[in-house]
Amino acid sequence: MRQTPGVSRVVAIDARLPLLSGMAHLLATGEGFTSLDAALPHIDAVVIATPPASHVPLGLAAIRAGKHVLIEKPLATTAAGAQELIQAAKDAGVTLMVGHTFEYNGAVWMLRELVQSRELGDLYYLDSARLNLGLYQSDVNVVFDLAPHDISIANHVLGSVPTSVRAWGNRHVDPVFEDVAHLELGYDDIGVQAHIHVSWLDPRKVRLVTAVGSKKMAVYDDMNVEERIRIHDKAVTRSPDKGMHYHHGAVTSPVVRFDEPLAVQARHFVDCMTSGAVPRTDGANGLAVVQVIEAAQLSLAQERKVLLSEVSGLTERTGLVPVPARATAAV
Ligand SMILES: NC(=O)c1ccc[n+]([C@@H]2O[C@H](COP(=O)([O-])OP(=O)(O)OC[C@H]3O[C@@H](n4cnc5c(N)ncnc54)[C@H](O)[C@@H]3O)[C@@H](O)[C@H]2O)c1
Image (cartoon, rainbow, N blue to C red):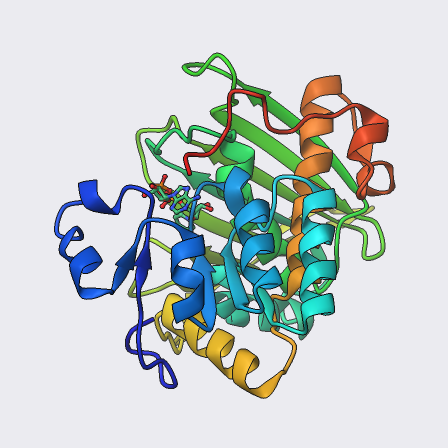
């Protein structure tokens, strides 16, 4: 943020600032605060990168004080909370943006272009995996922690939002929160499914999105910095007389123009707050992802496919409590 054009000063706000190595001195120089309330008179905008359960209360406090707000994913832990943030930002006339970092990533833009231009043919499905020996979060399960990235990538690449969600998950180590989960998102308007596998309990770090079409297939591997996108000229066709036909063509790796996504995101936030433009990942974009997560929580709890129309902002009606009571954020 410090290098972002238009930003003259950055202060750190963290309840644990005095305990964080190399940060305590910021308190004495006025570049650090232990609470948002104390910092508010000194700032124009806030980046909220605290545990997810604290996003709505902190976001509302900042917005109601007239500050522009960039909130890390997920925007909120309930659709109702996300809607409250959107309404508050509208009332206050400030910018609300969500940190869906992958929507500022050149490789994701290229994958979107491959799908939208139909270079892959008719898209059959998207498949994504986000696995590693991850940091167990104190207030949310692995779906809230990792799947927002994959859901936002899928929505962005497909240019749509899902109509249904089916989720399976297991709590292997933590008794309360799922540490491994699979989601199937149905994009009924375009007849495409997106499969998402997220895990905090895997020996390998995997960040992979595969798009499979009728003519070609593309793989986005975020761990392969030299060849983030590979296009496989491979396809299977079926004819009634000859059966299955397998086409094996070349594998190509186009050059991806890659600027650090967090820097692109930060520049976009500052541009929007100064010009009043609507961010690419605005509150509505964040809400769309939270709605899918909320549907996934209901699907996990009730072991069934859930329609998005069942959950959109209707947390109380479903009796769903996505964040268990023990999950109060540190303030
Ligand atoms: N975009 C990405 O790639 C990405 C990567 C990692 C984390 N995240 C997101 O960033 C957020 C934070 O994740 P993390 O892993 O850094 O969490 P963390 O628990 O490691 O750090 C959060 C910090 O927030 C502070 N904090 C908590 N409540 C506070 C409050 N009310 N006021 C001031 N400070 C407070 C804590 O003291 C802590 O230092 C989450 O929403 C997470 O999903 C995004």
